[in-house]
Amino acid sequence: MNIRHMLFALLLPLVSLSFAQPAFAQDEIPAEVSKQISDFFGDLTSSEVKEDEAFRLLLAGGPLEKRDDDVKKLIDRFAQLENQYGDYLEHERVDSKAIGTDLLILKYLYKAEDYPILWKFTLYRKPSVGNASPWKVITVSFGTRLDSLSE
Image (tube, rainbow, N blue to C red; front, side):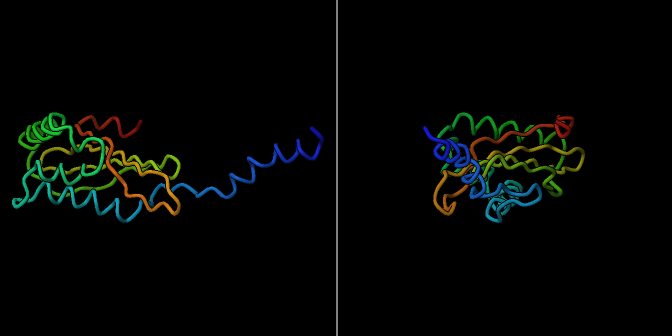
């Protein structure tokens, strides 16, 4: 291998990095993702939409969509927390982290009358030209461990 081939082999990874699409800024998340989460909280607290339908709409197209037992557990757990901490007042995104260009981790405070509930959503989209693939929720969790906000 001559010196020119060695330089090319060393520089090629650097050149390809400069053309990679940048990750999202910490405060920026795609508008469709923000709408998806806001719609979920709106549906979840609506008297017109049942809780199971709110979860099914959120999880549509993702790996949790057909896991009925897991979705039922989420719904039951949410009902317990809602009964314990009061009615929904508002929600607020408190953290977002992009891992590359196709994975997002979002944390929201669901502010209830007596205590906030921390929600964590992980969304993924299949890599594609122009990033036209839809975002899908691949994990959702919630609880009252607010100390996890500092992790």
